[in-house]
Image (cartoon, rainbow, N blue to C red; front, side):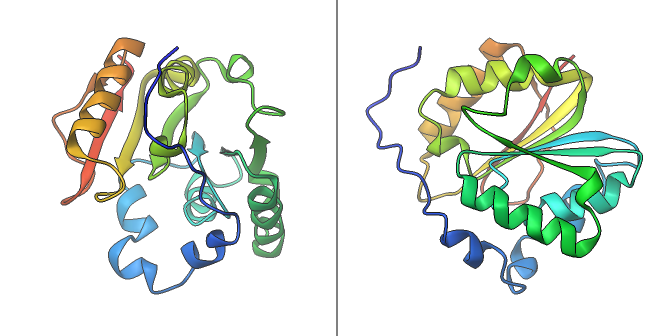
Length: 189
């Protein structure tokens, strides 16, 4: 098990409302970021989904033939996401999973085409398990968009996470998911 001296404080659930503000689309547009990677009928995973900023657009992209698995550690975040999905008519496409309770990587082995790990890995105390679980759920050829926020995460900490991803079996793509910041595509070959 990986040990680390960093504080693994969790973003308070109420911050989830701030993550939903429409102005966020100027700098972080879900459609622009995800459309090249998510196709109709795919099974996708939004790990650290919060209230679904990326989850709902993912569900629109996969359509009714796909499934979006939304994983979070905070039940209140998942409850709000479920309400938003119901209101948007996307509830049948979205399955919420609570870390430590209803999320079990072994139940999703080799089922995920694309995963989003966006600004959340730094909050996970056991990153080694995180990357091993992600590798296990990905289909061969599947891709993870992994990004961390500058300021919260140093380049050295990001590189350490990349090494853990490689140890789990991922290949790091030469393609960069985002023009700025700490990001990488992790591929299961």
